[in-house]
Length: 527
Image (cartoon, rainbow, N blue to C red):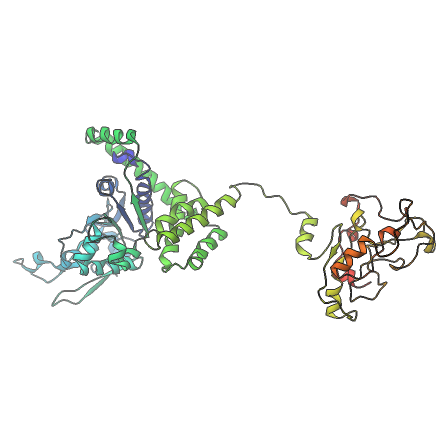
């Protein structure tokens, strides 16, 4: 766009160029996007906005209509209500999109509308009729207001008119003249504005906060910081106006064609539900006052994605448009918190198109079943041990421990094959997991299999481990730890286990049957 306008685009004005493109695209789509450029004097705010007049796209209107009536939806007093056949008889024409300005010296009649004196005083058939003002004539186009902060202070009645025009989309304007009935018109007008907030009377949000909130975006335009950019600006100023008119018009027509192609694809751009939910959460999370802020962010994200030829909005789009939509609506500290929050989300979010690994059945079981062991011991300490009858809610909490499947860490109980009928050395009953009893569980209760009670002796094997007797005079370190955790002595003492007792050699999970993968607390609590 900058090459068509004959201007130099640099980091200080890049956001304004992009905002102008988004606003033009949105206006063509039938939804005004109001923008306000702020910055130091001489940074090119007004120049960029006024220069766009050269390359404005064209619109269709009823031939000769001062209100720019769309042939498909006429709205002015002369054409609304006409049949399609009558409108086709009047004909249509293509004209550049309207671009009008409101000056500080403007009167309310010239901005809104007044009596058409030419028709009132003509010699033959004089009549009292309305002459539309600047706003009605800018329907489906743009109105530019320079130094809008001064206008809001010196002409509050004009500011009130802009409030009605910008309050809804489309807005409205009411024309009132003595002796004539009032006429209310819907107007679809995009308002562009520029101001120097460091000069009297100050920033617009401090003068008319309601009017400032009507702007979807506020763009800060900064001076160029690179001497090479300044050199380019000086060179462009020397050659300005030297391009042959035919070449300049060809460049402008190519840009209009590109904009029309983007307009055709705008309806294809989608906002992912998660991203829309994130935009909505900003409103409540950071106590934003106006819903216009989040509405502007959603609209501008779609426009930005469309201009970049994408069909889906990304989190990066939200990070770029959020400061423009919030700069005039929140204090600097809140704006910093919001941008930091969005930047953190972008860093943690997966890259676009990144492959998400599928969730395995074991991982799903870990997420779905709380308190389930896949090869280890889950023991919950009891703060108030006491007698609790089995089957009561307290008993389930008191026995909140779990054994594991057949693996090295899951062999919580010893088994003596010599004490089992027909059992071989080291054998376990199918599905046996272990035995764990909390303070509220009767001694000797087994979970998930059969075997001797925790206090039983293994007659068929040596009671020594490693060839040494357990030191007499107290419990082993294992039972001392269980006592500190508040768990009763229901697990077998490792020091008293025979050498041939479990644990068995570890097996991979792929070698386990489905019923050996996990044990729920309910299964562990009911033998």
